[in-house]
Amino acid sequence: TQAASGKLGVLIDKAPADVFTAGGKTVLTVVFNIVVPSPNSTNISFSDGPVVSEVVNGSANALTTTFSTSNIVLSGPTAAGVSVSGTVIDPEGRPMLNTTVSLTNSSGVRRNALTGPFGYFHFENVDSGQTYTLTAGAKRYTFAPRILSVSDEVTGLVLTPNE
Image 1 (cartoon, rainbow, N blue to C red):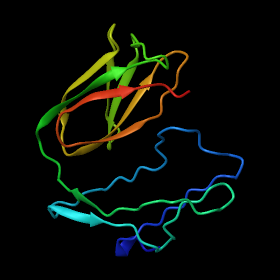
Image 2 (image 1 turned 45 degrees about the vertical axis):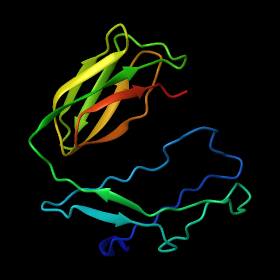
Image 3 (image 1 turned 120 degrees about the horizontal axis):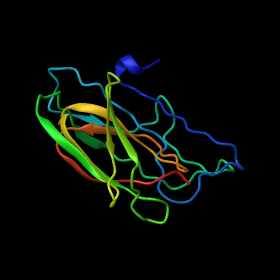
Image 4 (image 1 turned 90 degrees about the horizontal axis):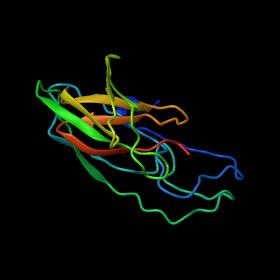
């Protein structure tokens, strides 16, 4: 209800016995649609409104957490084409051959690439200044989609299947 004033509240909740597994996890992705012309930068800050800035454990005990102000650079779409590339590996870290990797723009236009013997994929002439969804598909494995904001060449992506 406060989005028009630039405020976004996020509450992520799980039952006490339903815990997050250890390790790095993406629990929230926020995508900004940039209006042209846009300012060069804007501040993003965490505050206690519209929801309290807090992290708690399964028993609702507060955990020590630091929330930091960040500065992001906004850039509008450009006509320049860049490349997006990376590798698909299995849970043991071995390259996955013949995996279909898809890059889909916000209009739903999809491009596909097939990995080679070293699990490598590559997309050329990707419009910069756009947001894309990157997915992979292979027998026996599922992959979580990744959101990419492409403003320049993207290299070194590593896609691994869900466990």
